[in-house]
Image (cartoon, rainbow, N blue to C red; front, side):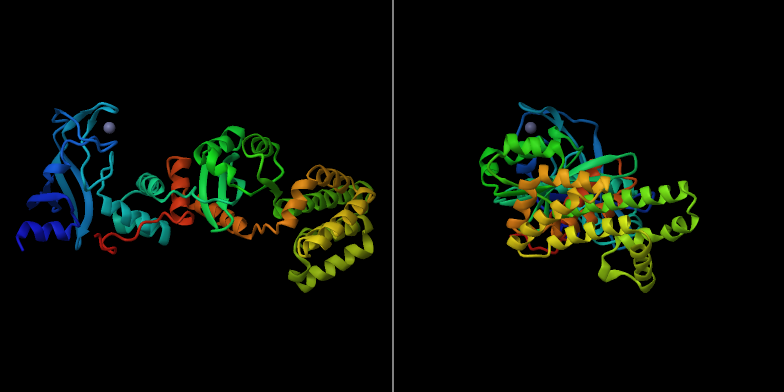
Length: 415
Ligand SMILES: [Zn+2]
């Protein structure tokens, strides 16, 4: 094998020729390369062969994977072509994505590490800033997304919103209930954002949707009615129970404030720390929390009633559909006359959302997967702190939860 071929193999180079290898004054390896003849004069954006324009800004370098312990760069001319569609652009090169200072193999390794290891491990091992990791994830996820077509064959999806960062910044995310994959996400939570999802999906695929789960937000409901009227809207059980938990919390605060106003210090003190006992699922309570709950039952009937209302609503989702719908109906009768403002209000909401809530029960749409994904997105959002944009966060999420993460470079034989 000729020496140049050995170098090309070591660098994982394809469709390119190694011209020379040197060590520069910073003791880094610099490999001069050029694309194969038929890879030249292609538009960096679309890859179309175009007439040459000029030599651009001369020689350029791309960071490649280290050779052993040594930082390595590829170096080549970066001439420009005039594309009929994209105007004057720098030529495509087979070893790097357009606009990147890194080689494909380098970027794929970074993406893989970003998905599979800690933040500091990626930055330190690859010797790049965390910020650059975000930009790399974006390029890799974008390309993989174009090839994978995550929007094919969808039947049952969940649409949800997730806040990332303080200051109420939101993402709208779409999950496939059948594969448990994150299939789409975008910054924002409004009609336009949900509309953008249906634009991406297209009319034909939208017509194939059977079930769409979501919370009770009017903006999602409005877009569904408009763009996807044939699919059944299912109200996520999780969001119903969440409303009950919030109602319970309101009752708790009202009772506590009332006790303090009336100078019942001991009642107020008894309620302190009751929050967790009331919140937790009864089967997860510690002994102390069980005692706390017994105190509430004894000392504070309204609050205990609120607790039972929340628990019974939760119970509904554990029953077979027919029994669940009957119990939900009974629950409504009870909540309407329970004389607890927040629960009377919740009863009204449930009546308004009846069709969607019953559909979720009837079709047994489990939101366990959506919740699991939401939890993971929140973790990713925390990790993505330091990325320059929500798009970078979305890219990392798509790599990890959308199945877009590339294999490590050189591990899959290219045929
Ligand atoms: Zn082009």
